[in-house]
Image (cartoon, rainbow, N blue to C red; front, side):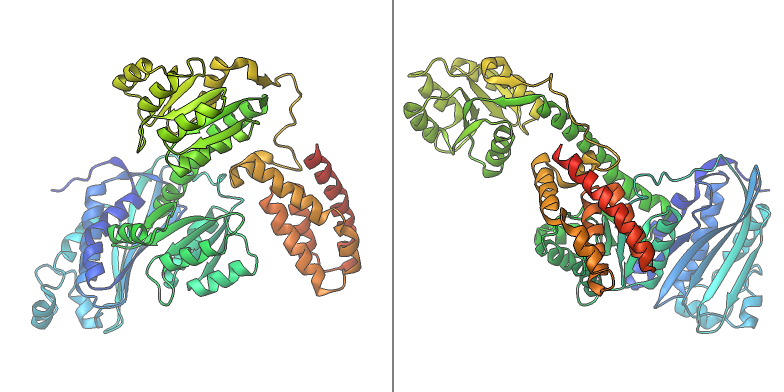
Length: 554
């Protein structure tokens, strides 16, 4: 009498819901739980997710019950697809006790059990398989079993479903990135590799952290590292600590992979003072990996957008010929504020508390004072009140994490002009400076700006990578000094092994510095085996190098 529903659902999220139900049991038995999901399966399917969940719960539950060591793998593969419908093959593979041929014959018969000993030891023999078989057949499918005594079991079934327009993962954010996957489990390595490669991502894998560190020491560059937490010898947390000690010029984004113990991992990271960009839970699917990556990339993209807007505003400010006192007890806040101001020529004096500020102001003249409100020894209110006793003209701007109404009232009473909220925003800071000391701000809006991105140098990408225009310019100048006369050296070493090493190094450097055309030429030279063709490519390299140097200098 059962009728099936027709509703939209996402199969890989359904798989995750099923494995979430059993991951604690798997963790307690030290069984690895995997999902191997065909990336060609459309994301939005139409069918009865509740009944499919029942089927998988039964099969995965039995696999957990009858497996003491090893692993369980839940698999989904696209078999057929037309304009409206598709056929899926799903399977649950375990490394459990297995069955012989006679035992397999009894599996799908109502109210039968393999033998009494199995029931006593394992608490049942999977009698729900009869219902599972009925549900699968209602979906125009069939179920099969493959097993050997002591060697595990595979239950496979097919089902017919409808689907909506196929969803394709947007790989544009990752297509040009290099990924390193570190995991001591070969099944997890295979699954992650298959997913990333289906998105045309360059992927390199290591089965232990030691090999990964050696690869990085050899000069390999990676934009992302997906590293498992629990591994022999060097675990994921220790790997990150060793990686940080190498002081790489560009730090990869770190995704830490773990199974059930996510809360324990977060505590471990906190205790060890180790920072990761995101955490990926096992077992994973294409959606869960994509969501983990996109969550960070979108956040990073938004931060970049904001910082790049600040960069554009900064280019319009030629200089600020001001002498500003920054009163702040926190060293990091001091540094951030100081660096922002120094970038446009402001002379910065620092005071660690209100008492220091008052004493400094008695013997020095400032164009503006940026005053933290809450400090030890003497707070910003008392310091401002003391300064106003001998200086009633210098603008005093309050710095506060939260601009409270009572702070505004009190700061006005002690002679402060305005407030700036922490963290300090570039735009707000310079609006404030321009408001109170406009005669000291020299704008440069009429000056023609060099495009921050062109075919030879993607400066926007470089700025996003290294975090500041100063560091970007410093690295580009270092590049010019190192490579301006390299072509003759390359040509003279064409037949030597050093040539390959030099080109490989230039490729890595040009890639990190977003010198796109130069990077592509280096790749072509690396792939070419004939010296005559290599020599011609060196001519192309020489022309491009001259152009890159011209662009950097301009």
